[in-house]
Length: 289
Image 1 (spheres, one colour):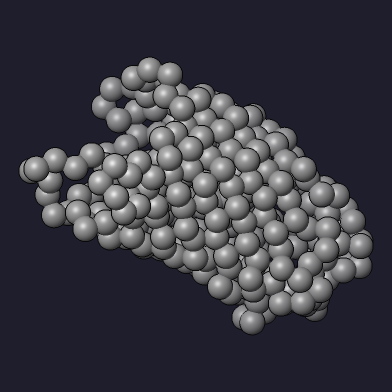
Image 2 (tube, one colour):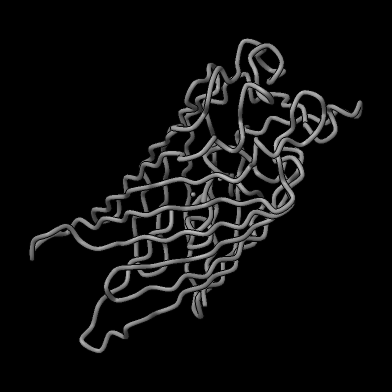
């Protein structure tokens, strides 16, 4: 769950779980058929929809995207993650593609973006209750998404086409899956989990902008696991594609995510716990190429 868990391109292209990839380009008469954009980000944490993918540790995020003037695009993003939260995984690699354009009408100022993103975790697999990775509970997750942008506001929503990061009654059950709230857990197939969020990027001048995010993740066939997440901060752009961002991230943090016991160590008698959705101040530096 990168870090839109584009939890990625959002972070890579100056945002935050993630993973939404929306890149605006001004068309000119000399517009090439193809264009490329890439970036590298160093962040104090990898927050995806309010949850730390790196167990509170720093993250390196990389991304590359190719765009066709027709509106079609495809990209790849990668970041380090922690196997305390994502069992067996140390890297997340996301593949995505879609189509973006403006709504019909010569005077339209509303842009839309539809696509799919596949979050993958080489070597990762969710654990079953007998302390073995279960291939049937793969962390790999496919999401479909749609976004609408008006000026500096973007509304985005997405739906899981597979199990939600492998969460199931086998590894995240009620009365055992979440130590912070034993009444919370998965009660059925988590395919169909969805999120919706509103993102803001308001330019104050040529170099400073205010950023914000408010969203909600809903886990299908689960209780006590839905989460509201928020972010507010500033972004400063410099010459040569450099930018720095500072933001505060906070959540409704259901009790289920408090003192979350790492599946990597907890089942082996060496418990490690963390509030994976705690409030946190974030800083990052990005270089766009």
